[in-house]
Image (tube, rainbow, N blue to C red; front, side, top):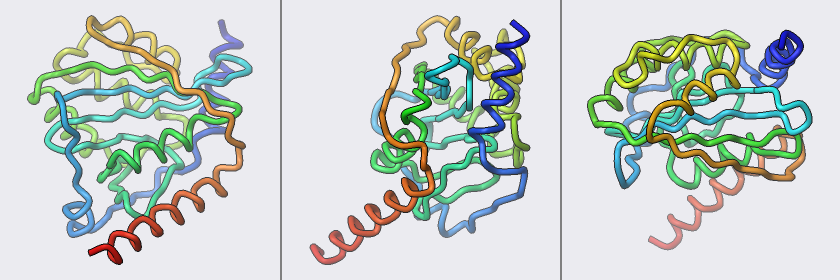
Length: 212
C-alpha cells in the first residue's frame, strides 16, 4: 500500500508541469471565451492513471454550470484560446475539451472520466470555490480538488486526499456517478501535441473568418 502511495506521488510530480505561479487572464478574454455546454448542470472528475503501474498521475475537475470551467490544479495543459485564472480554465468548447483529453490520454496514461449531474446551485457553489482557491503547487492536484468537493453540498462525505486514485474512488461512491475510460496511443511528447493543437485551432479560426 505504501509503495502504491509513493508511486502516486511520483506520478503526480511527473505529470503536472506547473508550479504555483499566479496566472490571471484579463476580463475581456475570459468574457469572450465563455462557453456553456448544453444539457444538465454537471461535475466531471478526470483522473489520469498510469497504464503500467495503475498509479494516479493527475486530477482535474470540470464544472458545467452557468459556464464550463475546468479546475486543473498544477496542470500543464495550455491553449491560447482557453484563458486561465490560477488553474481555472475558461472557454472549454467541445474542440478545446477534445484537445484537453487528447493531451492527457496517451501511450503511458489513460483517463478515467466520472460524471455526476448536479443542481445548478451545486455547480455554482463549486465554480465559486475553485475560482477562489488560488494557484496550486505541484503535486497537490488531488488535495485541491478533494478539498473544494468536501466543502460543497452533495460531496461533504468525501475525505481530503493527496492521491488521485483515492479521490477517484471516493468520488465513485457517490450515487449517480457514471464512469468511463479514455485510451489513446499518442506519444508522450506533449510539447509537440500542444503546438499541433494551437496550429489546428488557428487554422479553424482562419477558415471561419474567410467563410464570413
